[in-house]
Length: 157
Length: 137
Image (tube, rainbow over all chains, first blue to last red; front, side, top):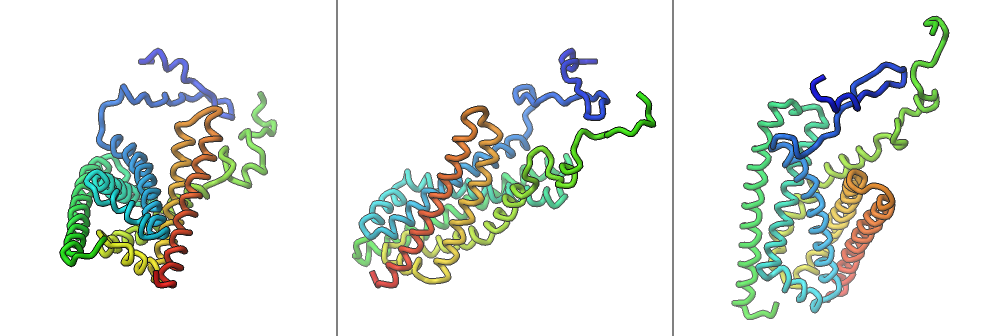
């Protein structure tokens, strides 16, 4: 016995044979791995994506309520801080989607070996960064264009 | 103990074995619900991102006109329902993992009620948009 604590991890099966119970994972003694950051990130981005979806519902509710409420919502989506939140939501959704696709692939029985996991991790990060950046820039540009075009035409938003 | 004496090798009732649900009492339905809703969200959220390109910076009249179209309203309602269903199922796993003791049940109920209400709010907003667009306002 290498670790004296292992004496406490002896259990018995229902048929009576003794087995060594696994130690519970102590996060602070593990060496840093990318995969563990990506794993917890999938949960965190899931929560952030839900919060963002709630904001999206409020936006839709404002549009349903009327022009006045919608104008208030646009003050939020139009200013830089609001757009930062929107970009954060977008990035979270993109990462959660990429992570979710990886989960579906694992569930189907593929890419679940140690080497494959370690190889796919950086790819997932790269895809997330790329897709998020392209979508965020393109969406902000489209929104900005439409807004300035309307301002030129002299319409009130 | 005499090995020839008949004995139960597994401490588990025959009914429990037949049900095959294990200690969780509910089988794999929750796991499947999470996966199926996730897969459904792939096309729905892709559709939403594409629509955002049409809608970015739009004014109120444009949003109402967009939301009033039957296909858009259908897709939007489907997206909202699936999103908050998936959120409910996913957040429940997080609550089960990290919230223990007395706080567990209230937190779980809170997640259930919160995500359900957000979903309902979204669906009624879609209905209101359709009505608004029909009345030409």
